[in-house]
Amino acid sequence: MDTPINVFSDWAQNGKDEGMERHHNKSVMNMIDFACSGLPEYSFIDAGCGNGWVVRHISNDSKCNCAIGVDGSFNMIKKAKKLDDKNKYYCEDLLKWKPHSKVDIVLSMEVFYYFENPGLLIKHINNNWIKSGGRLIMGVDYYQENEASHSWQKDCGISIMKLHSEKEWKRFFENAGLNEVKSWRNDQDEEWGGTLIVTGIN
Ligand SMILES: C[S@@+](CC[C@H](N)C(=O)[O-])C[C@H]1O[C@@H](n2cnc3c(N)ncnc32)[C@H](O)[C@@H]1O
Image: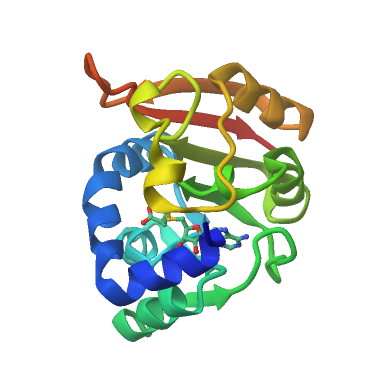
């Protein structure tokens, strides 16, 4: 068993980060559509951005006036910076980092369950990263109702992976002070619960 940061640093080196980009794409596009369509202009942070593929994608939207990626893995951020010299990337622990200016949208895909207490992280992001009226949107494939994901901690050898139910994830958002909290599943079928997406407004 190794820490999430060490495991994903290896993934950045052996090219497995590109698999995440392919597998997460559909759900991330669903999250972006929900969060960004209809906004005249917005600033954006990807929390746990991996190799930065979401930041690169969103920065091509003419309505996006600032796109930032944050990840704790040195190798992921090194790769993101190599692929993109237009946007900003920070190698930081999400629980400690704060942006210089708050943003309209914070998105995070497949990251929050690597934290011992996701509620603390969600509160930190809501208090310190998001403008009043801005939105947090999160996607996770590893959750209680998605039984197909339950073996992942063993399969990947990751020391911290916290399995929570949809109800518990929504409760984390509500307890962090987010409003209009809602959730849905994207891209589910008979064997796959789909990505659990949870969102709320600051
Ligand atoms: C499953 S990957 C998802 C990456 C990206 N969101 C994507 O969809 O391709 C999880 C990411 O969370 C990052 N991560 C895990 N714990 C972290 C922490 N405490 N602070 C910052 N990043 C962290 C890892 O380095 C890794 O890049």
